[in-house]
Length: 335
Image (cartoon, rainbow, N blue to C red):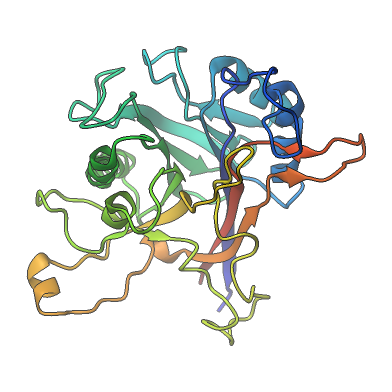
C-alpha cells in the first residue's frame, strides 16, 4: 500500500488598520508605528516561518490590501470586499491564496447580522458592520480536492453579537459548503478552515458557540469547529506517529497585545470544521463523542508568531501590529 500525504499551511493576522495612527502620541518600542514601517515586517514574519498556502487578514483598508498584494507578489491572489458597501469602503477581511497550487471555484461575503447578504448591515448589539469572507478553492495537484476557507472579524463591543455571529457562521458555512459540493459533485468532503479575529476569549459565548459540539440551537444543519490550539498532534497525544511532532503549541498563548499597555488575550483563532455533533438530548445524558475534522485532516504544526521586533538589520524596534499572527499546518494521509 502506497501512503501519500497532503499538507496545507496557512495563517491569520489582524494587521491593524492604517487610519488611527497618531504621530503626536508618545513614541516607544511598544507604541503604534506607521503602516509604512509595519507592513513589510508583518509580511516578513509570515513568509519567513515556512510555506504559506493561505493567509487571512483583518482590519485591512483598500490601500492596505494593495500593499499586501504587492508584497506577497503575483503568485498570490485574493478575494474580499469592504464591509461598509460590499465594494471598497471600510475594512476588508481578505483571503490570499497561492494561485500556483489552488484554483478559485467560488467566493462570497456575508455580514454578521440577521440579514447576512445585506451589505453594511449591523447585527444585534454590534457597534460596526462585521463580515466573513467565504472561499472555495480547488487543489491543482489533487483531482477533485476542494478546500473551503472562511475569514472573519467579530465585533469588539457586542458580546451578544459575537455569540450570535458564531451561530450564524456555523449555519451559513454549512449551506455554502453543501451548495458548492453538490454543484461540483465531489467524491469526498473538503476540509473547512475558519480563521480570524473573534474578539472573544475562550470564556465567552462567541468562542463557546463556535466550538460547541452540540447541534445548532435553531435546529439548522451546521458545522462545529475545532480549535487548532487544543487539537494539535503532539508528542504527548501521538508519540508513535511517524512524523516529527511539537511538544506543545509554539509561542505565546495570547494573540492580542494592544499598543503600549501590552494587555493580552487569546482572541485570534484557526479552526477546522467537523461534521461530528451530538444532539441536545445526548448532552443531557452526558454522552461523550470524539470529534474529527472534516476529511480527517489533522493539525501538525501550531505557532503564535510574536509581533515584537528588537533591532532588526535596519535598526528598527517595534511591534508590527497589536495582534500576533497564528500559523498552522494541517496534514492528511492518503492511502
